[in-house]
Image 1 (cartoon, rainbow, N blue to C red):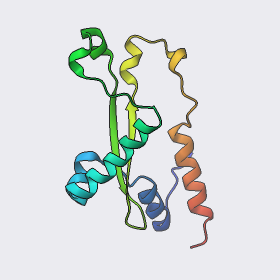
Image 2: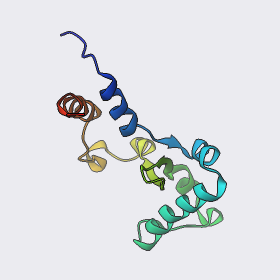
Image 3: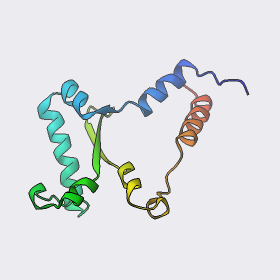
Amino acid sequence: MSPITISEEGKQIFGVILGQMSLKKGIKDFGYEKANESIMKEFRQLYDLNRWKPRNPSTLSRKEKRNALFTVVFMKQKRGGQIKTRNCVNGSPQRNYINKEDVASPTVGIDNVFTTGVINAMTVDV
């Protein structure tokens, strides 16, 4: 099977799709005030929806600290200039103590995302 070539328009579309940045880069690019406002909005939403329960680390056992999951925070500037922050849990450490079947998530494979993006990029009239 020969490799797929992507047009310039397709590359721009992928740039928009994959145009996220890390928290550190977001603070650097957008400035502390704007980035912090966006971050607090995301965490407030998680807290308000009872998805996030802050805990004092000094009250956690050693095992709880070791099994704690870390989050990955991404920022992106939307077309209208709004800064959007998304918080994702890095669940890979769970593999050490939870069966794979118990934590399986019905998510789309990255290959499927790219394939769909290529098909859409090739069929869009620009």
